Image (cartoon, rainbow, N blue to C red; front, side):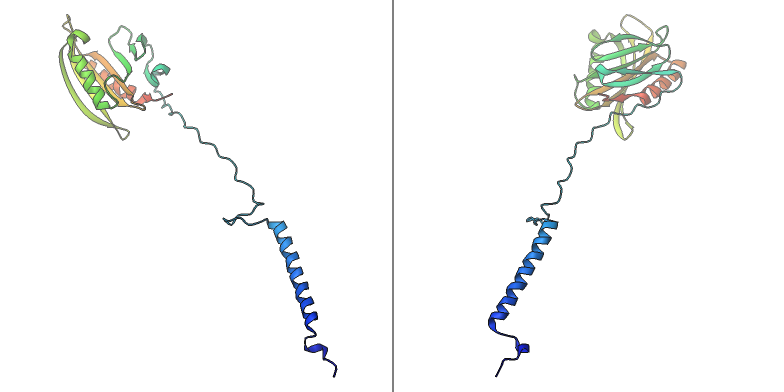
Length: 221
């Protein structure tokens, strides 16, 4: 009796059909690999482009605050700082660690100093500077009276020295307020206002200190 063709055919025929199916699957896989690439161990593909190289962002320099009318900005690259003085004031002294400015006639004085001699904190620098002031032979400051207090400025601690004194050999008393501001790399910036003592001079001293401090920008390098 002849075999019914609808009952599966011979074993040789079935093997041929399987081989054709495997060949078709291999062709499809080849097409997929050509389009999408070979997967790596981490799930990426060889055809995926490498991410672009990144560069470190530059650290911006501190912004300089606006200077009020009647004042002008002073930039001191050697001291890595900027501050302001009233119009018409002149610089009377400058060296590697300080810049000193005086009003016409020399009645008032504003100075900025940057020193690392007494330590990297505002407290240490204030204590060291006060010890030097107390050495009359070195500072020429006699009859010294001093008050030290910590204050907050922009969330950071500063130290203020409030001094009363007279120059050795002179009787006129003077008042000095000095602010110690810690900067970077162990630097401490010292901003001072020195005036005659008493009355209207102390009012002017407070005004000068408030504006000069608001204009101070340390670490400008």
